[in-house]
Image 1 (cartoon, one colour):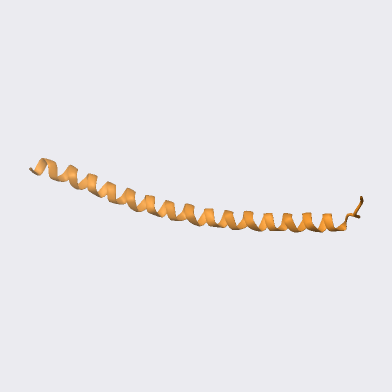
Image 2 (image 1 turned 180 degrees about the horizontal axis):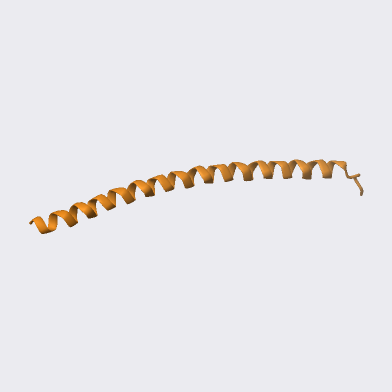
Length: 62
């Protein structure tokens, strides 16, 4: 019984540590994803404003 106790405890400890690291990485990726999404949205808004401004400056032709 003692032979199985130490490997079992070590494996359980490794699983818990890896789970903690995984959750931490997922949270970091989620924060980066939100930041990139916000940056992309602002770039799209700026591009739309530039497009609207340039098309409104052009003379209308028939």
